[in-house]
Structure formats: C-alpha cells, structure tokens
Image (tube, rainbow, N blue to C red; front, top):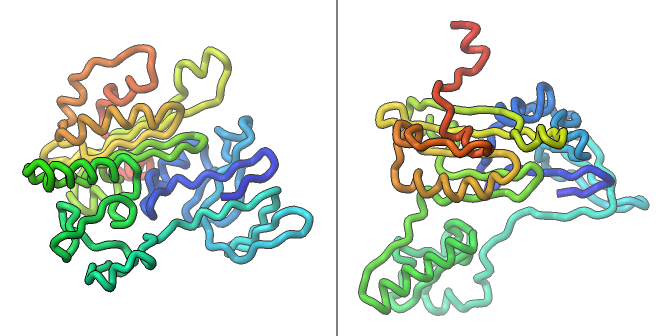
Length: 286
C-alpha cells in the first residue's frame, strides 16, 4: 500500500480472496475506472473529488529512494511518495516454539495443524488463533479459545464453525463481506441468482456528497438460501455484522425480503432488491 500526496491506494482483498469482484467495482466507481486486465492508472470517477485513487494490485518490481520514495510495479508504472508501506502478509511464527521436538505436526505454511477442536496430533497440545492459519482475525481466535475451554474444561465438546465468518476492509470506501462471492458461489452451487444495486446514499444528497454504494446478495437458486452478502460504501462494516447473523442462520431470500426496510437508510437497499441482476451485455444479447 502506497500513500502519496492526496492519493491513497486501497486493495479490496483479504487473505488472497477478493471481497469485491471487478465488474462490481466498475459499476460502483464509474465506467472505465477499473479493469481486470488494463494495467494503466485511471482516476476513479466517484472518488476523484475526495482525492482517492484505487490501483490494481501488481507484483512489485523494485523500490528505492530518489528524494521521494519510488516504487516500480511489474506493469511498468512508477509511483512516487513520502512513504512505502509493505503489507505482504505474514506466516505463522512457530520456528522458536520447539514444536518439532514435541512432535507437533505443521502444515505446508509452517502453521500448527489442528483438528476441528483445535487439537494437534499430540494428545495434550492444542493451538488457536493465527498460529493455526485458519482465519486470521482476532474475534475468530477468541471464539476458538472459548470453544477449547468448553471442550476441555467443561466437558462440552465444542468446535468453532469457520464457515460464514464476516470480514471488513476499513478502506475508503469501506468494504464488508460475508459468505461466498458470486464466483465462488457459482463454482460451489452451480446456478445462483445475484441481486445488486449501485446507488447514491440519501444522506449524501443533503450535503452534495459524491459517495456511492454497492449492495449485493448471492442466492443459491434451488433453495433460495442467501449464501453471500457484499457491501461497499459508508458504514459497510457495521451493516455486514448484522447481515452475517441472518446468513449464518440460513436465511432464504424470501425471508430476507419479508423484513421491512428502515427508511431513510442505506441498509434498506438490502431488503428492497426484488429482481435478479442480469449483466447488461447478456440482457442485450437475449
């Protein structure tokens, strides 16, 4: 992530899994503002007045100083700024724990291998949190620890369910996601319906703001179960926490739509999307 002048780069990606797909970003931020294949820099229409620029994620070619901090990307583009922040991910810090001596098995990434109850292959050793490289989020580690305590101290075998864990990127605009992306849902379930809306929040109109939002639901076609929810825009992380409860409980699209909207809010868009989204090119060809 490079912070330079009035621009800020935002990567809407977490744990190597895209939270927002390229087509959605293009519709949210304006035509020709984002391309999955185009390596050129373009100002994002919706964010230009706010002084933000969204850049694709490229491989780093080189970094150095020439007065300013200079980064050259694999695309050939050069970025200049005051500071370069390298956020390249992390690996589990297990090398100095003596796990090999204890006979604890590690996975290919050096993380502690555990079962559903956070137990290692050694009968009296358990591991929770980032060291196991399952979902590296603080609330997940807390729940894994609580499940371990229930199992080992209270005699109530409990395994934390790592499915449908919500996450957020506190960028500008912020992103909230829970469940499957459209791509992953099609790969897992085959036929899915997608409900999406790109709009200007009502509160932005009061002060002439240029904020735009994206709300998107991914629904398994057969059961009508909502398997994914994705939000980009102001307060998206707050909204996704509430959406995660319903999706975790297996809510269907019909049940979702039966929930009355709260007006005037941006969140009401989530319960007023009635017709499945059809890609414009497909609608024209049909």
